[in-house]
Image 1 (cartoon, rainbow, N blue to C red):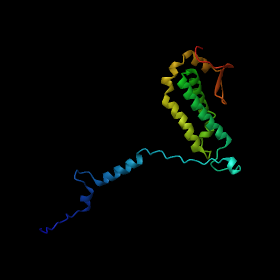
Image 2 (tube, rainbow, N blue to C red):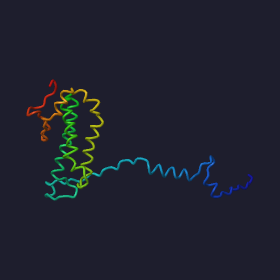
Image 3 (cartoon, rainbow, N blue to C red):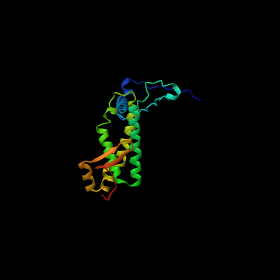
Image 4 (cartoon, rainbow, N blue to C red):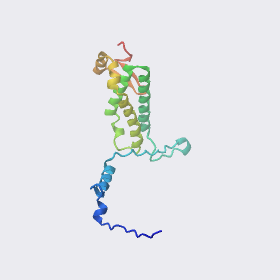
Length: 183
């Protein structure tokens, strides 16, 4: 076996930086850096918060425990989601229309205080409210369900007289229980 002498070609810095195609290693490096900076991030998992059971812990409070007001808010969000899905499944278009309008109104007015940064449990509140709002966006009510409610009914409801009882999400229209069409 011949002992051939292998020579390593002498490379200078310019040869290392330039590739065979004329592109540079630096452009490759910068491309990766910019892609990393501008690529959408995966959503961070929201840590589960410990909610103490006052029966077991002697009424001690925690920094992450929910106030009664926050619990009522979450309960209402979950109730709306359940009732929207139920109305959608049962084909109760007037009720679905009213539920979605109520969510819109509450989100723009009474729920604002839960959206700001003043709550320690903001992540829990945001996660649940966003789940409801995303579900509403997914079902595309303007194109899928609004056409199923007659314009006459929508006009009557927009004039006023529609009230919601938040305890059971029941509606009254001019003091009478809301009915489906025919109006």
